Image (tube, rainbow, N blue to C red; front, side, top):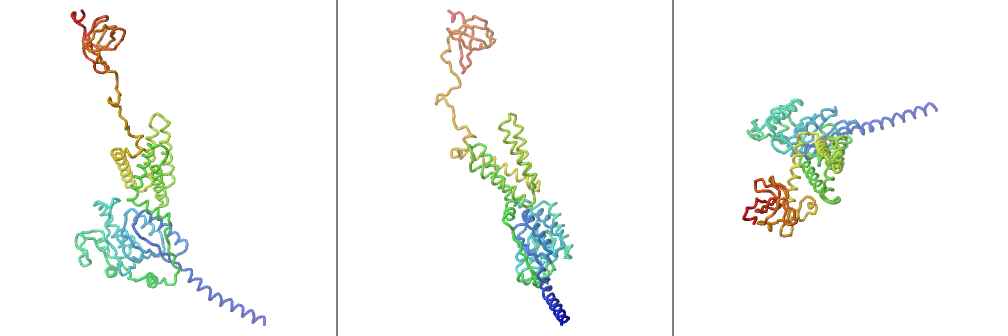
Length: 441
């Protein structure tokens, strides 16, 4: 009896393990779904870095990049590509609308590409941080990168080249000479730039043998969304312009008001966004604080060196925080230009309505009509005789009655105790000549 009870217990235990273990194994298959929306820029890199790290920590079977982007900036795309290449997790691109420009470049660096029926991929022209077409050197390098991305995954590089090089002629895919190639989902499947067309995310899981996997959808935190916004190359010059103009106005206004508050908020957003995006370190903030201290010290030091060093330190910290020295230098120049032009415009047209500018502009005038004169105009002395108290060489002193007056001769030397005639008065300048015998009598 005891033996049979032990046998039944063991069988029940084995049966329970046979039920639990498969269900546990199924639950541990994890797939991460990471959205790649809007522009490809510095802030997106920080979000993708965090999401890929989470996927690695969770032991994810695959990462599906849900792509819908019009493109973005080449330097940001390069950083993201290095991030993708650094992980060994299976990478799947799901183009549910469009993967253009830098978005196409990112998709080509995944292991598999699937597209929705209305998906498109291509039109990968390289642009600079100002939104203009890049020079020939940058364009040539970008075309080479597109070709290399296609070759690494076994795709025909001619189509990747046509996406970035408008001189490639592929009229059968709506890419006549002078236009960049953009492939529809059907065309991408035909040229093997797509592994398949799926109508939904669930169908994608099915065709990639990931059905039943636990899907973890990552979302951008508020701070990451804010970082993406404030690190956009278009937004950075605007923030710096507001900061510089606001702080300059605040320096010349009593107390602390709206202009200074806006300036500090703009600077705070700039450094906060670049810190979250991983572009700036705390050393940039330390340099900025040192610069601010030096400028404050300028109010108490007489030489001006402290203020100059403070301005240099602040500008250097801002350029250093941006990562791209050229792009940030341009942004700083734009901000300074806007601040100077803004101050000139406000001084010229709006100074009456801005009390802050009363400290900058002298609005009062000392006119003769209001009774202001620079000196006493002694026109009443013209024609009078006087006696020299000192020799005039040509300047000296004369006396009229009991009044001593500084005077100059008309060019000749006049000795002491000589009789002279005042011939001209020009402000404080009194001109005399030696009197003739007839004048003296």
